[in-house]
Every structure is written in C-alpha cells, then in structure tokens.
Length: 373
Image 1 (tube, rainbow, N blue to C red):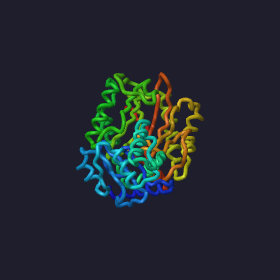
Image 2 (tube, one colour):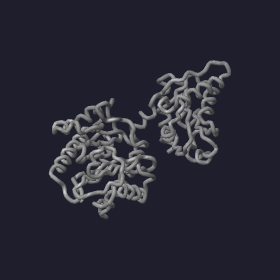
Image 3 (cartoon, helix red, strand yellow):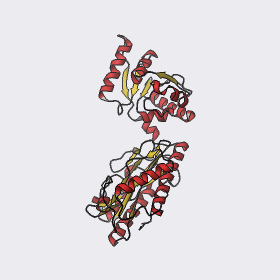
Image 4 (spheres, rainbow, N blue to C red):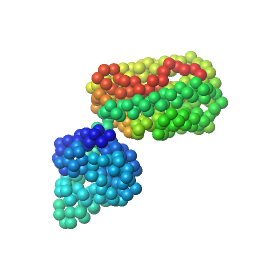
C-alpha cells in the first residue's frame, strides 16, 4: 500500500504546486486513508509541496491510541502523536515556513476553521499568518479514478453481494410470509459470513407497494404472492463498497409487472452502453432516461442514473441531469434507472461497472432477467 499511497500524495503535491500552495492539510478521514493507508478513527495529514514520494517533509498526525497502528500502516511518513491532531499539524506547518496552506473546506466545520485560524495566529507569534485556501475536493477528484488494487477490491465486494443473493434465493429465503426486516437482516448476515466487513449501506428491502419508494427502509411488511420485491444492497471489502439492485416477483408476475420490468431493463442496458471514456455524464443519464420518458414514464424515474462508488458508497462522479464532467478510464460507477408507480410497485435494476478504454467491465454479475420466485 505504501507505494500506491506515496504516488497518490505526489499527485496531490502536484495539484498543490499548481495552485501556489506550500502545503495541504487533509482532514477528511477517508482521504487520509486513501493517501496513507491508515484505517483508524483519528488521523490527519500534512502534505508539503516541497516534499517527496518517500514521505520526506510530509507529516501524519494521530493520537496515542494509534501509535503502533500508524507505525505499521504509515511506515513511510513521519508520525506526529498529539491528541489535538489538526492543531499540532497546523503548528508544524508554521514551523516549516508555510505561507499558503490548503485545507478541505467541505470537511472542516465552521468552528474547526476558526480554531485553525486561531492556532495559526498563535503559532506565528505576531508574524505573518499563513493564508488559508480551500483545495475543495482535490483528493476526491483523484479518488474518482481507481487503480488496479482498488478495482480488485470492488470486484471482491461485488462477488460477495452476488453470492449472498444467490444463496438466499436458492434456499427459498425470498418467499411470501416473511417480512422485509427478516430478509434484510438475513442478507446482511450472509454477506458478513462470506467475508464482508460490513454492508455497504442500510440494505433496502421493499415489497409490494413499498417497492415504489426508491429508498424504502425495511419494516414489518409481510411479503405476499404477486409482490415486486426490490433488493438494493452491497458489501464492503477492504474498505471498498459494492452496490447492486435486483427486483424480483414473488410466485407469479402480472402483465403490467413484466412490462415495467422490461422497460427498466431496456433503459438500464442503454445506460450501460453509454459508459465510455469521454462521455458526458448528463448524456449518459439521458441515454437511459429517454427510454423511460418515451414510454410515458418520465415522471416515474425520480432520481439520477448513477454515481461513483469506492471508499464511499456515493462519490464522484455523479451521473444525472444535474451532473458535470466526463467519464474517464478507471471510474467505478453505478447505472440504476427505476420506474416507481405509487401505490402499486416499482422496479430498479442496478449494476456496478468500471469504465475502460473498451466496453465497461461489469462487476455485479447476478442475472438481470426477470426472476419469478
């Protein structure tokens, strides 16, 4: 990990240099993990523009609980142990002559920013206080493009979710008479048994009319004959999240259910086909959304087409009508159109894929044929 983390720090270093910054203070814990490999609950990182990939000049901060863990996980960066991690790194930045300090404005609270300013002012003892400048989501922009190790973790996370669903379906666990909560808890337990660190997010199990609610939280609703059953779930492996939705029908499918399912399947296929290097995210969304709109259900597709996935379940890029930017090789994204008919039921079909220079790589391999259980 240290070699990959060092290359990531160098990429951030180059961004800082382009912006005229002397150093960047990274406080978002997932960004710290991405740049160092540290998985504890308290850590921050000072990346100096004049540092090096070997860690020279950079400084990792944590508290005494993590001294041993930091030595093992961040062996190539000097470690500063101090309970007041961010203030300690800020003082270190002043001591090294930092004039312009980048910070993560989306992570630091208003109070945290005021504290940072106060610490910097105190540290210079009447001298020139370093200028603070937001780097916005510079690290998240790097994280949007996955390396081979990250893609392997995503593959394994998707494989756990695929296998968990396959086993539950084969064992008859998705059947009338059970509750949404029972199915959700069993699906979570099966993913854990198969090696997941945790579910990727709160598993969605939505039966009957509840399937028309895009993010329904499972409750005591009993599964019944003829219900749509929508399952949106994922597994976390080595910190990376999978995301998949499959919609099945219990016992028998009505004509309207088959029609809606076929429409969403067609839309989802169009969205997958639109994933290409250089494709505008708004155009990708439109390729899928237009299929549903032309069938008269545009008003029943109420969310964006997809999102990036990695160390977070929702990360850059966003694929939707309000998205911005283009796709690049190495981006891991979801494609998840849906049609939701209030009071009746809904269908969502979702895959996790990786954009490549050729066809996108499909990571969630569970069949998308309509399954009647």
